Image 1: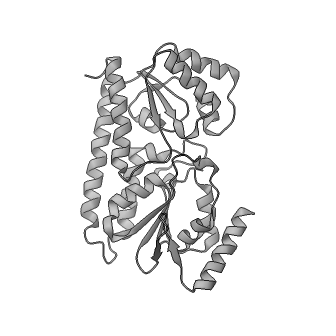
Image 2 (image 1 turned 45 degrees about the vertical axis):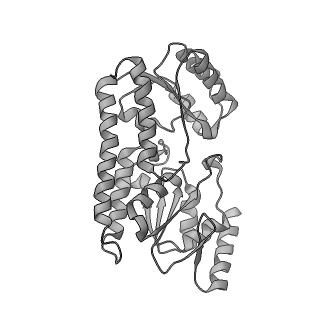
Image 3 (image 1 turned 180 degrees about the horizontal axis):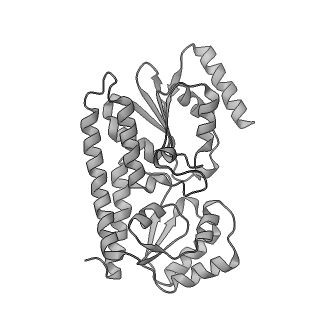
Length: 298
């Protein structure tokens, strides 16, 4: 019912205005006479904005770091933005199906870049691809391919090379962790940053069933919770905690980590700020600090 309402309102907007006027996240308007890019999640919006610079307008639809992105429903503003887009960036892998449905229903001729499809990650697997350097590189290349030959993007390839080099720097830091700290135990309330942890070859000891249950908003088994709490008492290197979707259960896990003097790295699903590379680097740097305390890094 919500989706049908959104589509109807979109049609009314187009019919009334005669041309799409896109409402940006800050309330300003943007005509579709120039390149306009929509991203569902803020991370991909920030990365794309770093890539295109002033040559295009990029709007992220999910920007509230205090809201649960899993509970988002498409709005009238989302519909208007999609209708005016030249490119729509979807996270995919089942994370932002509301955006995929909106694109399908809007009749837009926008190029759709789905990061899940770009990286071969299908629904049912960890959808938090914005914590994957490999996924970020794939998106940079895909957007560059879409825009490099369009008028007004003569400097795009240079920015693309610079951005890919910065991402390789993050990857090198992850590789250094993997070389020195392979199989070091870590814990996580859910799988939000697990791509980083696995790329660093760290061993996530928290039961996978518990991580999946928390990510899906359901209660894990009593046994899995007991196991997770017990593992924190064995002092893993750190606990990754998604503070954006905290629940009484995750708060219990965090409380046990504090009682056991396990360092806690707080992460979110919605990125603050506009520097995607800095966002990833910040999490990797926090991991390095705690792994140095563990003794595997110098």
